Image (cartoon, rainbow, N blue to C red; front, side, top):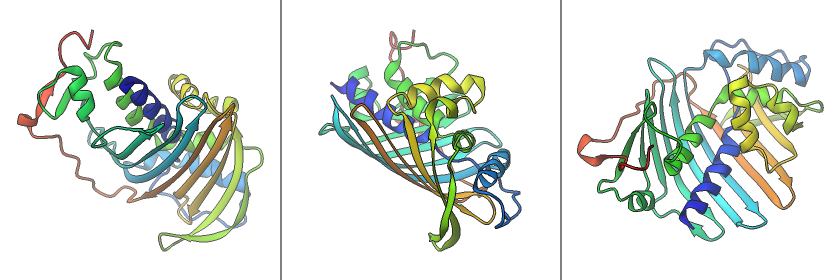
Length: 274
């Protein structure tokens, strides 16, 4: 049961974060006369300059077999001087089954630290954090891999590329998001076509994350610098539904991502990473 809960949680979070919008810091203000599709294309082009950001997310999902679920949390991200991510999921619930204490994962370089009380007990750990070297982690450590997948899916650039597959995006007005002026764009994108916009090594992961959906409706609020401040996603297929809202801030601001104290970290028990 726990493994199923972990799997559904990962799928839900991966579905959302695979869709998160990417942006760049050296953007010039977008001209108001640009067509909506051109705005998305420019935003996709600006993703490479972003080196850090913060995202807050609330994800509501349902599944014909698993029931209703909710994932809520936040993530800090930096790409320089080395890749570092701090992911906190305060609420992880699916079908009335929750993960007590939530989930915490920290990635620095090629090492991931995971803190899940139920996962610690399942793997027989004695310390609150489990440390895993990505270069040594094999396919059998599925529980840790699920949370690593969630981290990897928080790729801002990939989302912008996904929404550029939209053939019906349009501007629907201007709105304030967290006291910033933005332009609101709305549209849909077909999953199959959207996945083709991604780099080849990202397509399979995104396809798996979006497998339960057909056409995804999106709303994105873009500020004058071309960076998204808010993203909403809605989709459904054969009884599975997704309703997610994400807020972005602190682009290219310094983030403080710390690994847990050494005396609180244990190794992945032998026999689970081969």
